[in-house]
Image 1: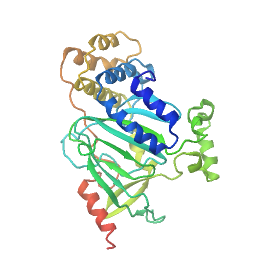
Image 2 (image 1 turned 180 degrees about the vertical axis):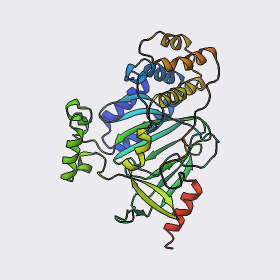
Image 3 (image 1 turned 90 degrees about the vertical axis):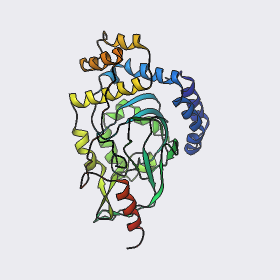
Image 4 (image 1 turned 30 degrees about the horizontal axis):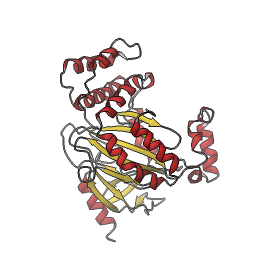
Length: 327
């Protein structure tokens, strides 16, 4: 989509603004325009459903359903789809508290009620023995209150499940432009990714090179304390959850979103039925879409991989007050 006028504007900003915070600030109004433009969405849907790699993707529950928009060595644009719990209950965390290492994230709530989020102070510490963590809430708001917001690099935050299907348009970029950024897409280096990472960690160059910390943590609430858990341990169950049911769930969500966004090009959708690149499980959603039958909601996972299986907004607020009161 590098010919899309909105995407071209962001590419131009990227090429002229070196400071990444300034880049995100300048791109913010373009994200909002983009997310409100029907032609943009039509282009996104067609681009993804014409791409063999996307059509035949093997989904896992580690990732939420999404659409690609654009990617280069400096930034990428995507659409993320967030679904409610089957109970439609509010104020329950979709995942653990986490950060995105050295990445900046601008998010525009493009469809639906959006989610509630909390941002935490970055100057937290993790006790090396107990893994207790002194997180402190810095801001709390809903996407209805603030449709566009920035999550800073290394800034812990949490997403609360929405009460109905919602979509965000997201812009990601490293916090700095680095000479090593282009290496992420180098196919030769991808082949030796793990040994290369080990060398970078051994030399203590992870932040300089701009890769994830050797030990990246997620955070959860237990007994009025925040605890850290290694990200790999937290995500292990959802990374392992894959297969036909997950593929079907992901594409049902994709088609439900397209339907609710008012995508009207039925000739394009009809053409998918004769494409050899389109897996067979797509066809029931294609048929429902073409007949105008409402594609049902999909639902978020009921539990997350923390003790007790879930966290609520109240749990997080109470724990933040307790941890930072000196009690």
